[in-house]
Amino acid sequence: MDVNELAVYLKVQKQTIYNWLHQKKMSGIKMGHVWRFEKKAVDEWLRSHIKAAKPEVEKGQKELHSGLGEKMGRKDG
Image (cartoon, rainbow, N blue to C red; front, side, top):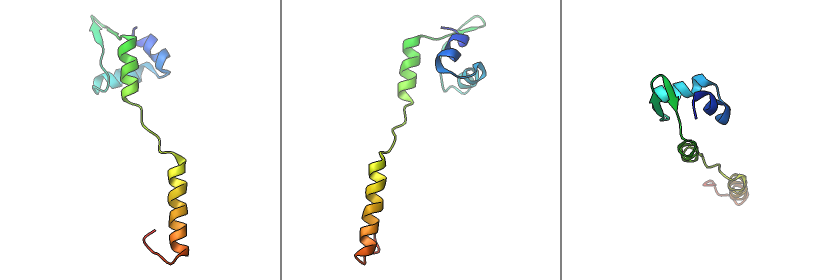
């Protein structure tokens, strides 16, 4: 796929893709004046940039734990 197709696929501006290429955050193949990208490589790049979210349960449990510690007279929370 070319830059136009990749921009549509990723739902970003073409300039964003050019910026990523310039910053070496993304790679592709330049053929003459046209950048080309393999969909499989793009999908792998996307998966490698997934950020894991912290479950809200952990936050709630920590708040619950610190609240219990305060009620029991502990200061370490």
